[in-house]
Amino acid sequence: MGAGDIAVIGAGMSGMAAALVLARRGRRVVLVEKKARIGATLRGFTRGGVYFDTGLHYVGGLHEEGALFRYFRLLGLERLPLEMFDADCFDRLRFTGAGLEVPLPVGRAETVRVLSSIFPGDAAFIRKYFTRISEIFNSSPLLSFRTDAPELFADVESTMSLADYLAGGAADPVLRAALSIHSLLYGVSPEETPLHQHARIAASYLEGVGSVRGGGRALVAELEKALAGAGVKVLCGSAAEKLLVSPGRRIDAVLLEDGTEIPVEGALFTGHPRLLPPLLPEGSVKPAFRKRLLALEDTCSAYALFCKCEPVPSLVRGGNLFICPDADITSAFRPDCDPRQGPFYVSGGGDAEADRRGLVIVAPGNARECAPYAASAPGGRPAAYARLKTERLLDIRRQCQSHCPELSGISVLDGATPLTFRDYLESPGCGLYGAKHSLSQFNPLPLTGIANLWMAGQSVIAPGILGAIVSAVAACIFILGREAVREELSACA
Image (tube, rainbow, N blue to C red; front, side, top):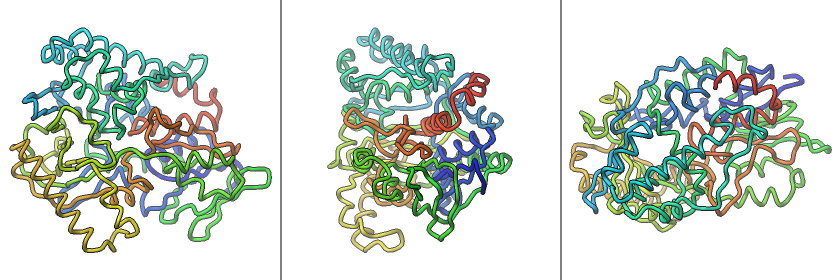
């Protein structure tokens, strides 16, 4: 390693994206990953010959002018084979208590038309809502690619929660639930979610929804090729143990658990923010910053069922299903939530190979009921934990089948609890999407107070595939300078 080297710690979507951007701008990059392979979460896994796509259920912004597709272009991934979801119903919302089914189509005008036909009394608000979230989305230079903006990180901030905004205009509680349903995919209650944060995610679904053909493992395969082509050095199987800081408060080297010491000119940390302070010597960052990182609350947790179902039910072909026994979805985010009460998210996938993919059913996760077993690790859980897990998975399957008879043919091959997600996702609070972006806490930005240490990941700027990439590019702008990235961003616009 030599002068100009950057160590990127963590090889999830954000770490891989940042490594590519930096390497293609002339920096020598080493990508450090604790697990045996990069992109572990994105890859998914196989049980009983069935593939489960755990990291890439579906994403928005995949049309040619969409934000995610443009970022794929920036990363050299524009040739990825895409599989677009059903344009008439990429998400099906089944409100069993209200006896109502709501299809969500692709396209802003079509979405307004469909929802207005179902909720005619709220038609004016529906038009206002979709106009507003589109305005917020397009106001972000990193989503609209307006590189001529005076301040690249300028954004529309809001002190109003999504729930308050909806309550101020939508009379029908089912409509309010339908418009906030995607909060389940970033793990923060509508009561806590800033309107602008929801808009950054929900508006991406308006013009193009789909996935990568072959799922997350196909995306990682292309990223591996791109990283190799860009000359990124990948080190897997040993976690970063310490960041060695000079008296001048600069990162001099990264020490790995296996004793390897990597001299660097800078480091980019992409893991959960609460995992950064233990890597740093006392006094290297301000006490207030350290305290803030350690106090960050996580997004909600979950139970998940990995199921085999042949053939895949038609209602989840080319789309997804949300089963909502109650119009109040906020109960899913409470620490004492009952996983059996839902709502439930069912992912069948939009890929042409859907028959050979498994169904993933996600239910609210109560981390408190798993707390007695928190000291255990995978492969060494006590028998009482195994009984709890089995009981919960069977309860969730029964509830889903009672609300959705079309799922009667499923068989559960495996399952996950809040502790599974804690260990699998390296998420201290069992959260699915890192630290939550909410009105109650201030998430970190790329700068850390150490001149050559930066942060990226789902907890910085926004969650999800798109949020992870945006945070990576934002960090790279701080590392390389705005002008160094402006030309590439403009070219992708």
